[in-house]
Image (cartoon, rainbow, N blue to C red; front, side, top):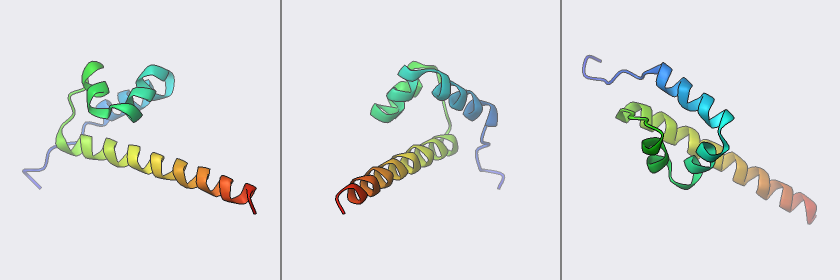
Length: 76
């Protein structure tokens, strides 16, 4: 565990707060995750990026499933 990069919770919290309150940032996360983080000054380590990518992927998947579920319910 000595070689593992430390996840900086303050960086992830700042990213989360910005995503909640800044629509342009939030939209940028969906369209260009890496570029948006760079433009806003975030320099995340590999573990932090993995956490962010996993979160974005999970949100996308849940939205897609909900949209699909809603469409299929409407046409039954």
